[in-house]
Length: 212
Image (cartoon, rainbow, N blue to C red; front, side, top):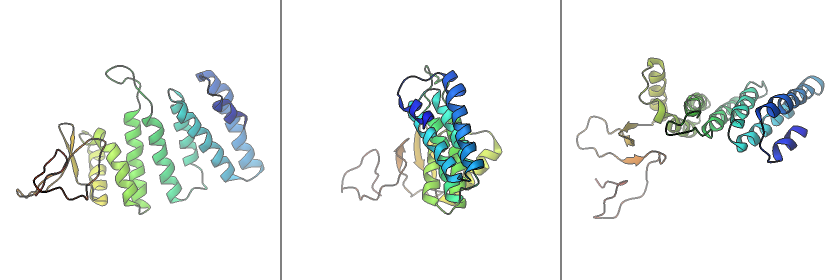
């Protein structure tokens, strides 16, 4: 509770405060829960609560939040669903880190994408294709043009398993229409990755809907 209270004060936290005060408190609390009380779920709750609070602080605190989430991910008490959920949450922690300048220096977008790919794979192992598709769509903007063969094979395999047929061309997400010349494609801007189930009005064509 002391560590949570320090995070909840809302004051700017230095790296020294997090590493020399908050982190030892979390270590001591987890040790007490696991070794003395055999309360593994209480230790897991402690890690996740502090991780979420640090994530809300932003800045360098999100790195500490991701580390705590990774530590919670290694807890033996997790099932397959919980393991996939926390893996996805690690990517969410890294995704809120904002970079500096036009090059976004210091951001963690690649780390976030990597953890999203891992989460998509784990969601598929858990039989949750919808959640896997969501994670995959978050990661593909950074990995669709990767030169690493293994990453390319993994993303393509996940796309086949989830039924995700989107490609990336000139900053747009375009649905793969296959080899047929008569097929129409749906163009969606990045960040709006979903198929529409709304029938377009007769005679109206927009940027998002193309009437066949």
